[in-house]
Image (cartoon, rainbow, N blue to C red; front, side):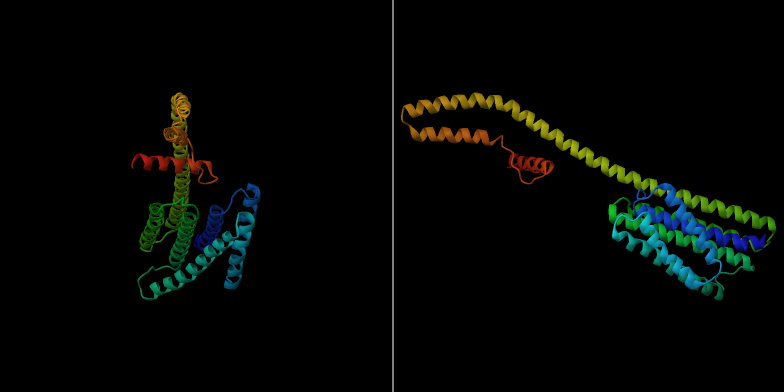
Length: 312
């Protein structure tokens, strides 16, 4: 059982890490760029290949494997050149976090801050915390990149996404602390079951955060459509009002034309010019100024101009 745990936990952790790396890159890029079966096949095959090579324990090989991932992701999901940069940011962040946590964990053990009486418990604790923090790091970087690029994620959602992973770390440490008092094969099996549940909860919680992000995007789009509909309604209402007023205007213009004809017969050019100015003023009220080549923007600007004129 102990031999199985010493192999099983690192393998599961590595596969989960690779899955989260590719999933995060997919969230940044365009998941429709390649067919779904191609994405799944490439990601799964490379993940298994990576885990097999990583078991050799060669740090340089592991680094090279990580550096190849952004090119695969760019081919699978990359929509723009900037995505390749984002993918490398994620990979570098994961690698640096791996080194940092290894050094930090060794220091905590050296100073007696973390103390467990079994090497397998140390290995289980380090493997789980390492992978969970790396997954948390990937999650935060993906949320920040998406927030920067599309504005789909709020700061509140980023904070909420930290709750379950932090709880998982505390829960695991507490579980291992009590396991060192009396370690049995049954407790190791229970630990594996507990570990699987924690991983499942974190994956499900990440899915919920993604759903919230998509809901935010859809809500923003809906608000834009509502605003556009409101502007269109205001435009048509204004046009309808102008149409109603045009009937009155035609009647007034006919009266003015009749008055102009009478004034010209009486050779009163000054009064006739004043009447002509009144007619031009009436007609100008129905003109819409074209500020730009965008129809909707012209509607907005004309509405604001009318509002300012009415307000003085």
